Image (cartoon, rainbow, N blue to C red; front, side, top):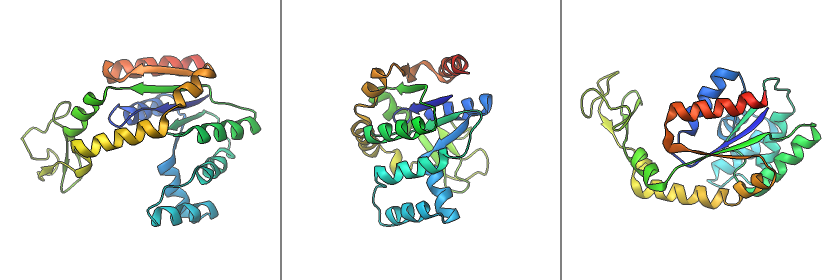
Length: 215
């Protein structure tokens, strides 16, 4: 099975990806992780990626797809979870072309929706330990002592990218980048939209049911 999983920051996508991988053994495809691996191994496409990232530029769609093509040439018997990829219509079209050449396709595109105000509330509640980098959430996973890490006793702080203005900027980028992707997969009959506000357990149950139907 080939599943695309997408959603705005703070929707719980990362948690759901981890749970699905643990239960099914599906291969995780995260563009950022694959980029770092290719750069570390100094592959030709990794060198391209390094140049763009080093210059503070976005990696163009053509290179993103070149990375995906290289990854997909290796058989993945348990399927692939595309986590946050594709992000644009050209990437989605390019991915479909790569998969067609491999005689396969995206089976489902799961989008986790969450209202902007809920995203902001969730992410502004995050706190990070200055020492061990452990992450807490004042709503869902508060520390036992206010402002103090349970693990090492370090001071907790709010990162700049967990402040409201930054979060709303990230949401704007997400909407701009992924605008049209839902329609793209809807036209193919592959779109599933889930409500990110229903909670981690219910989300996991619904995603597992989708995966079971594809197995």
